[in-house]
Length: 410
Image (cartoon, rainbow, N blue to C red):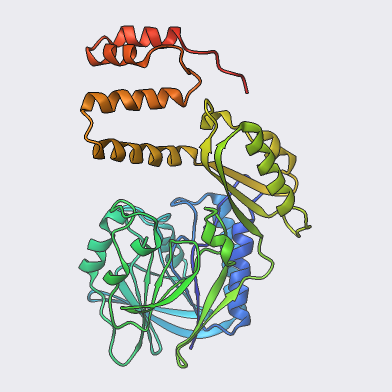
């Protein structure tokens, strides 16, 4: 059997903007790519929709999108099993089995959007249950709040069915794919994935990945549309996987005619405002020199340090982005403060190593921070520190404000 594996359509993304049709166009291209490669089944790993309660306009476009499935005639029986309950689905078109994602997640007493589509006979929705089609068993666990994800996976405890091909669908963050460890962001690691499955598929994360792990073969299809503008999405385009279950062959196919995405990280050291503006403008000119069939997405990330007296809010790039708004959809993020924070942590470590008293450490920090602002030598920092130390807060604030230099207008 040839199985197409897709994820994260985010239907309805950008509603009311110039990208309003893009999620549907990309999803349609993905479905047609599956049809062109003779898929007999489609698996979807969540976030079919961008909102838990889609708008009427999104529903209308979704039903039109799903009419593509009728282009392949079929006579397929899908048996859904949950605990001791069985339900049969007879499809005359290309069958689709899906789990809900975190964007569609709703409370137990409320119907989510995929349950509605199942009631309409358009797909089979799985959550802590299985669906069998021929010699293939699909195990699915829909997206849940990240803090509860590992507990939900353990409580479900899926086991592969002997003598069958087994695939498991998940929709959660995975610790190894994130830059930091936080149980509010991710509780599942690759080591937690259940063993014995022919294929483990995870949605939610928007870039494509394929690797062998302890649990077996692990893949992430990635989204079909760029919503988050992550660096990894710029390295490999959007697409789908085709899995030949008999040959156990897996292939990634790129969606044709997709929007280009460029990600640039610009680093600065004690940079002046004009230098930052000039470099951003030059970067945009270089990226947008060629002609593109549709506006590309451009994400520019600014990091490093600013010149003395400058703050992150002082850097306005509206003029630069407006200049190229007819050529691209541009997003600029400023992360100067993160670098400054790391630098201050390092200063604290150095002070602690020198075994200075708490008072000396506090005064050194105050002097250091004031020297990096436009206050300069407006007043003796020791006077301010002593006022704060003995609790004369109002007097310290008054002294601070009386000596505050006038800010330059941007």
